[in-house]
Length: 464
Image 1 (cartoon, one colour):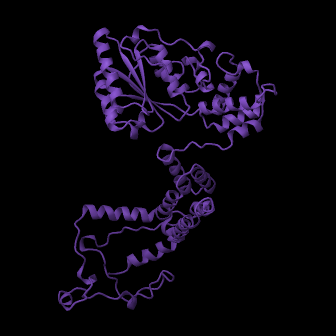
Image 2 (cartoon, rainbow, N blue to C red):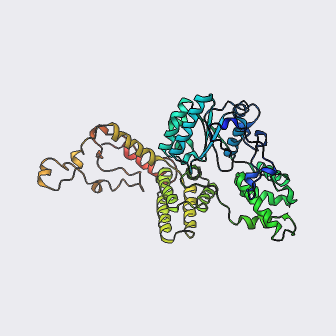
């Protein structure tokens, strides 16, 4: 990325389009092939298509503070470089990985002096801005508010969580998408034919299925695709440089070895994938549920985190429709503890399939929500005297436990197994006076809850 850090950097011409003479020896293919203009960028048509706001702003050099949010290799840094070549403003680049508050203050001071001296704007590009802590982001905010600098940030993480609210409110968020396989194939073929910056001088031939393999492997990441292509190109040539320069699927597979899955255990992928699993389970789709489970396990997710979520699901979304679901999930948790991975994969898979195919009910979840609401919004009344324990004579004299009826003595004939038989005596109330008659648990019609519902309706209709 070009960096104009001099106070008089604005007098210097913007970087020209890179040619073969500009390529640094040993520079990776992904860096050499980075697009130099908007028209060279593949993908992101929703942002850069004809007439789109971002394209119009770049072409007219009307750049306001913005954040580029998207997965790796989607073109965030590329867009920043295109802006650097297009703008007449001073363009400064910092990486949040290595820069500190002192670096930020230096840039701000120079930007302020430049504005006073010549009236020229400064654009500050911060790569991986999500790695800046609150204090570092706060150091940028006053200068952005005053218009001393125009901020462009790039992040793979959700700005809603990783960027200060005040800074976020002053920036337009542009969301970049991972590239499609067709778009990756376009980039790969372009690099194979480009003789100045790409691999065109090597006169390589590539099987179509080998290119397809690279595109699928790369998960929408152009940088990964070009890196794999470069390594396969080196593998196809050989040490002497005289072997047939032909890229095949076996060469690609040898280079790839193991696919690096797009997954961040503390970022959006973590939450998005567990959300996908939860919703697939709730939708009773065992195939999708197994797929999202596999995505997490193979990417290195903590299996105990997964099983904790399964246990929660067993009570929240299955509940009394199939009480055995909780037992299965706790057994899976024990299996994870006892044997660990990879042996426990199938225990987790068994729990997931059980949950997906079990009857569903959120009656317990809703019931406890109503309980929490009443506890927060109503008076916390004392326990009724007749259901208090009376271990001492004084308590008995104060009517603790008075008139309490031992349910087993008169209620044996009101069991769930035989809901048609009425009790021999009136039922007692067990709620505080102000909540008598309150209903929290309303069973559904799925699985075991159907019989519970029938029994409970009869019980609730009985005299008190």
